[in-house]
Image 1 (tube, rainbow, N blue to C red):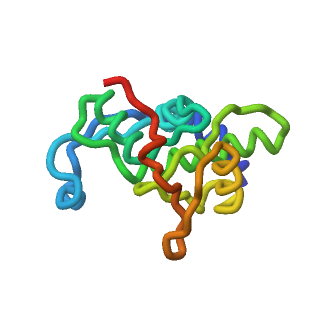
Image 2 (cartoon, one colour):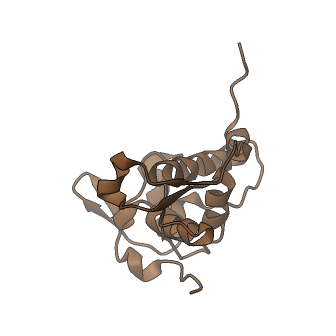
Length: 158
């Protein structure tokens, strides 16, 4: 039986990515027509790493940056989210081994400022880490969001 890949090995496994494709027909009602970039895992990780303490980014901002970088209409929402999740788990894996990774994955939010319950440590760890950086977390039904998250988004170079 093959040994299971570590999260860091998954993060480093770029396969044939990034690549530019036409937006699949099934995704066009939501994303429109044009080209879509499927990013490499390390590209998503690199953007997440640039978010300084006290600032935030959402998956949608990451997708916008990736699309612009590759001259595409959009970046794939599915792979971008998966690669953010892999980056978060790789950072947690390194931390559990006593290694300093430097990725503050809790600063990467879902659309609308929502905390991602799939990140390591779940909602409780994310709430604690974000509060330590001065953010206020509020319940929105069963979900949790950073209050006024848009005021804390990383300002991108235009």
